[in-house]
Amino acid sequence: MICLVVAMALWGSSFIALKVAFAELPAMWVIFGRMALGSLVFLLVWRWRGKIHYHAGDWKYLLGLAACEPCLYFLFEALALQYTSAAQAGMVTALLPLLVAVGAYVFLREQISRTTWAGFLIAMAGAVWLSLAGSADEHASNPMLGNFYELLAMLCAMGYTLILKHLSARYSPFLLTAMVAFVGSVFFFPLAFFSAPIPSSVSPLALGAVVYLGIVVTVGAYGLYNFGVSRLPASQASGFTNLIPVFTLLFAIVLLGERLNFMQMLAASVVFAGVLLSQWRGPRVVPAGVLD
Image (cartoon, rainbow, N blue to C red; front, side, top):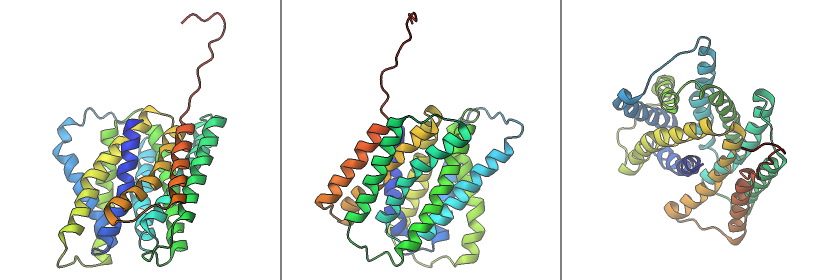
């Protein structure tokens, strides 16, 4: 649970870093840069990867995992952040837990308690409230289109989480996270190369944002998230993504000088309350006659 909270904080900060990088660099070069840097980190520590035991037939799951994320997910997220604000894109992520919960119920046969459902709904309502309570962002040229792209990214994230839960029993979080970086580098390089030329000059701020995305977010956030998903049910682990909108706004306050109004602070409290409720597990009822 601690790993998942830290991962959500890193992902929340990534929206800010992406907006900073996109202001100076073409979107596809930013995504390729973060994937390439992440791949370099994994190559440097590859000797500590552990044993790899491929299971026959897993190629289709590994292919589906890579297609959902990083390929389609980052493609849609890059498009989203060109049209909507970082804060609004962060709000759309509140839909992910419900999408994963439904998907886990349908495909993984995970049982969802009423308390968990209630927590998800409360947290989602809080995230929507956060978005409605905020003022219009001048950097969001077409928020409806941008938020739609972010919704498509969340559908890809749902597929990633469900397939990851299936594969995490057989492959380590290290290997699965490294695969995200390696596949992303191969997938986004031709897109970046043919979409736009490399800028002749880049500010230290934009370059630092790409480095942060590649090393801290790609390696750190995905590693922590994959570890968390391997230890918790997919529907429960996905509930932590409701923290992303809150962390996004908090980082916007610290790094961009924005301020939360009173209604936004109340909405953020509702999001946290919903996440806590979704993770609540009541005491187990021990049947009569069971001693241990």
